[in-house]
Every structure is written in structure tokens, then in C-alpha cells.
Image (cartoon, rainbow, N blue to C red):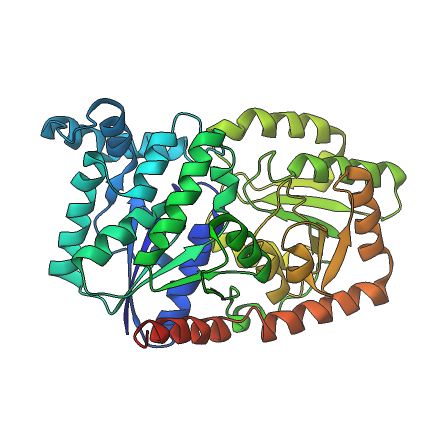
Length: 422
């Protein structure tokens, strides 16, 4: 089967959950013998594991300028060339990953609805490329925030379309209430142009039904990892708490830092260390500086991994004892947890969102999401060696049975094949 993934690029500077999930899909399908093409939107995706062999469509800088100043789709070619240049895209990449939709409402609705002239100027290029160059058997769109693309491709190509759902509400529900209402209505309406909807947890399936209606048949496909990659992972000699996600406030890094300091002050876990990775961008620098100042008394027991790369995943998980990402919103899956299980790393997470479903018996859940409660939960996981080893065994079992790349690829192919039988 030939599969085309249409995914938004995030700039490669930090851990992007949706980008990573799509790479997992593509890698597992390739391993199973299928042809996969990844077509990036907005920003280039440079890491070799994605195997990008497609032009960049909807370049972020061009699309933003077009929406701001050329809403009738009449942007001069020289401006289009300038805004789509590598230099401009690199600047945009350094500032990518905003968690605020302020000022981007019109672009968001444009990609969801797929009606305005600016959208049509870009979607026509993508459509022609698919029609003349690739001709896939199935098209998989990364997010319902791009569902306007599905609408257009459905009307111009006779190719089944699958659309992923994951954490859209984190963006949409931070928009002005009027815009948010329109966005959810249009997503619900445009799902008729998609053959199948999939998501990564039963929890998020419930959220999606609340947002777009219960008459949609949504399949759950858990993320999967290559278990052979982590089969020799062993915990470090000294206990190390790991944080591996974009290092910013919304992902709760400050809560973990406060908990770590409390544990160091109590000295209840000898030689305890903290290791933080996942990258950050320009918007996060002030936040990171404040944490470094806070951790200065414990500098010998703290490691900031300043740069992010997909290549560092395996090494990071093999260097930690537990992982904790005390995220401040209701996460739809938590890929960093599922990957940690593959390395036999237990997790300590707030009992929110999908985490009770994801973690099962492979970690410690706590409430409320405060530094005090987190410190107590970390102590519980690390203070009893027999209990810790049981958590490790549970993590490995969960990884092999649920979060397995072979299992995931089989489920994806099952969904894709269903599209031909509708």
C-alpha cells in the first residue's frame, strides 16, 4: 500500500508530540513493507528519519503574509518567493510552537474550512502534486485542524482519506469563544469528507465525541515503538528523574523542579538527580533561565539537555530511573510515557486526562498536580526497590502488548483497509 501523510512541521527544535506520532506511523508502515510519503506543511522537517521527499506546502511565512495582506489570493510572486525562502522559514522555525492562537484565528479557520482564496492558492499546488506525482492509495491527514485539506482533496481526488484527532482542543479552546464555536462546528461538518477518524486513546475519543458529536465512528490506535531498540535498557546506578517533552510552563516543568528541590531538601532519596530534555524555543528562554537560577544550589545533580534531536530519545530514556512530565492540561496520550515503557522506565504523572488509561499499573498517579503531591509520588516510586522493579516489569509488559510498533502498524492497516469497504 502507498500511504501519503500530510503533516505540519514544527521546526525540529523541540519535542512535538504530533510530529513524533506521525513519524512512528510512517516508520512502522515502512518496516511492514509499505511505501510511505510524508508531505510537510508550514515548516520544513529536516530529520532524516522522516525521509522527506516532498516539496513544502502552505509555507508558514507565506501563508501568514497572504492572510494578513493579500486575502484575495493576489500576492505578488516576488513576495511569495521572499517569504517562502529558507532564511524566512528558519526565522519562523526559531519562533514556532506558540501555545497561543491569538492573532492566528483567521488562519486556523481557513485551514479548517478550506474556503478562502488564500487557502485555494496553496491547496491547488498540493492537489496537483498528489495527482501528477504521487497517486497514493490512502491519504492520512495529521490533525482535524487541517480538515479543510480533506474537504478539497475529497472533491478533486478519488482517494480515501483518514484524519487523526489529538489535542485540538488545546489550541481551539484557547481561541475567543466565538472563533472556537465556529471551529468545532466546521470540523464536525467537514468530517463527512473523511473516510475514517482515528485517535490515540479512548480518553481522547470521548473528548472528540464531546466536541464534534457522537455520530462519528472514531478508531483508537495506540502509539507503538520498536521494542528491539530498547531491549537492553537498564536503570542508572543513582536515581534519576527524567523530564522529556518541550521544556515550557504549560508542560509543568516548574512543578517538577519544585518537587525535586523539596526532595533534595528532605534528602530522603540519596544521590537523587534530575535530567531534563525535549528542547525549547525562543519563547521559553526566560522560563528556562528562571529554572536554572532556582536549581543553582543543586547544579551538580542537574542536567539540562539544551538541544533536541530525535536521535537522543533512546539515550535519554536509558539514562533515567523514572519519567515525570506534570503537564498542566488534559493530555490526549503522552507519547513520552509510552516510549519510556519500552525502556522499562516507570512514570509518575498527575491523574488527569488520558494518564490513568495510558499508565495503567506501570507507574504512580497522584492528585492534585502540585509539587508536594508530586514529590510524595516520586518518593513512593523510588524508595522501595521491590516496588520499583515491579513497576519496571509492568512497564515492559505494557510496551510489548499495547505500545508496540507491530501492533500499531497492524491496526493502522486495518483502518486503511476499512476505507475501501465503506
